[in-house]
Amino acid sequence: MAPPPASRSVIRRLIYAAQHTACPCHGCRTGGTHNPLHAINQMRKFATPVNAPPIEKEYAFEVAASNLRFGEGVTREVGMDFKNLKARKVAVFTDPNLKDLPPVKMAIASLESQTDLPFVLYDRVVAEPTEASWRDAIAWSREQDASHFLAVGGGSVIDTAKAANLFTVYKDSDLFDFINAPVGKGLPIEEKLRPLIAIPTTAGTGSETTGTAILDITSMSFKTGIANRAMKPMLGIVDTLNTRTCPPELHISSGLDVLFHSLESYTAIPYTERMPRPANPILRPAYQGSNPVADIFSMWALKTTVEMLPRVAKNQDDHEAMRQMLLASSFAGIGFGNAGVHLCHGISYPISGLNKKGPKYKHPGYKVDHPIVPHGVR
Ligand SMILES: NC(=O)c1ccc[n+]([C@@H]2O[C@H](COP(=O)([O-])OP(=O)(O)OC[C@H]3O[C@@H](n4cnc5c(N)ncnc54)[C@H](O)[C@@H]3O)[C@@H](O)[C@H]2O)c1
Ligand SMILES: [Fe+2]
Image (cartoon, rainbow, N blue to C red; front, top):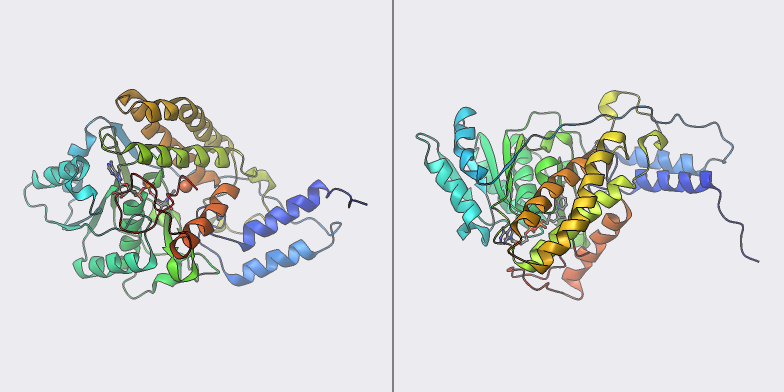
């Protein structure tokens, strides 16, 4: 005889336990304040009888603003931004492929157009960064000790710049101090980080709007990251010219990332269903479940992606569709940055991690010298 179906409350408790014990990435709901004891407590709660006194549910949500400037050709303003910020030295991050393409050239020309604005360039970011590639970028950044940071690239570049900024401020910390527990210690970020401006060149990750940075822990064959509002760029400069050089495969894979960010954040557990309610507002996570504000951004991004991504895939000259996809990417970032993502993203991380050891699949259209199942394709 088939077992009786599980009740709604049992399923909910299972989801809560999973949420609080597994924390792979930006799907993680505790905003970088994990510790293993907390995870164990959550498991204990799950193990208590269903009729035990209820744990208090969340009653509030908090919206963290992302600063964006959106327009055609706005990359040219970044030099003035750093001048206005009185930058002593700007550390510019990009990857070997992008360094010769128009988005980086335009950003560099803009920095050069300012008098007395020193900058240094790091162009070794690895697509879908690894522990080793982060360590290289961090070592370089600590040596440079720049006052300000600029990332020009896709999610890989922006995430690497976030990590470089964090570990330049925390100059004696180890990488695993801030990586989500249980892989790392998941320590809170208490110091103020240096100003980071992010210029995305893919319509995908929305990393210019989030406090998340993802890396591949190759030795353990999976991805995880650091999730903390402190790492959010001070400004995202979203220039509609900057995705023009993306090959079709990149448009499609990064566009699929937008689709899943918006879909998953819209269908995330509502914030009112989360338990336990934080005892102190500082413990309220960035990824707090679906909520009325995130829903607006996620739904707009979802509708736009469903309409525009097929147009981009069919016609590389459809600049209006590309423009809308870039906006959708940032909107979805604001949506999932405040609500979180879930199953599809959780499943994607082992696929990426194991690919490097096993099948070694390399997606067409990606100019990289290592196996890659692009994040959005997973
Ligand atoms: N921080 C977050 O919130 C967040 C969210 C989702 C994904 N991610 C992470 O971001 C990474 C994926 O980023 P992505 O999809 O933006 O791609 P990417 O940054 O990995 O870039 C992929 C390739 O595309 C090239 N490229 C980028 N822009 C180009 C352009 N305009 N023209 C030509 N080539 C270009 C790059 O040089 C690179 O070779 C993954 O590591 C993923 O886990 C982060
Ligand atoms: Fe994603």
